[in-house]
Length: 232
Image (tube, rainbow, N blue to C red):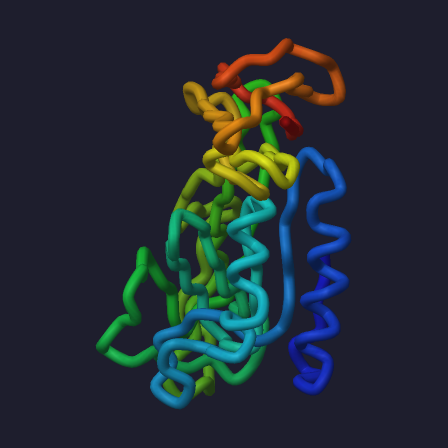
């Protein structure tokens, strides 16, 4: 999914489009846009807060697996609310350094280098393995290449766990908890939903993925490997 962070006047409209699209049942959901939501660059410390305010909640509620950004001519990685945000601008010029202070959620970074990221998706393990491949270092004044690395030199490796969603809804005369689009990691144990009717009402039926499971007061999904729905 590609968003356009250069058109700031359309951020809210893009959020509405994103909400309608991102929950479309795709097995993997990666989002990319130019300006970083999180960075430790001294000129933009913390990142673009307006983008975070408009989009981060949707990334989390709809099970986005990873967010990729550019703009900064460095490599940076952050984990915020369990979601990995990666800045990979190590092909741009000129190169420059980040600030010594790092924004919360910081995991790793690489400066004054040329590098790219290779991502390998492994459906069997519900994971994507990302490797930052470093192939050259640039002098601080950007005047020369000071080191060249053997092909395939790995600077950093990290794993993205596939995030799935269970959409849980109920009618007007009861509640289901948790409710809405509930994000879960693929294959990560179980997720239980509790159904409670209002006073003087009873549960007529519960549907899981459109099929009846009876008038149950709770339902547990085990070893979740795909998106699901539950309604009461």
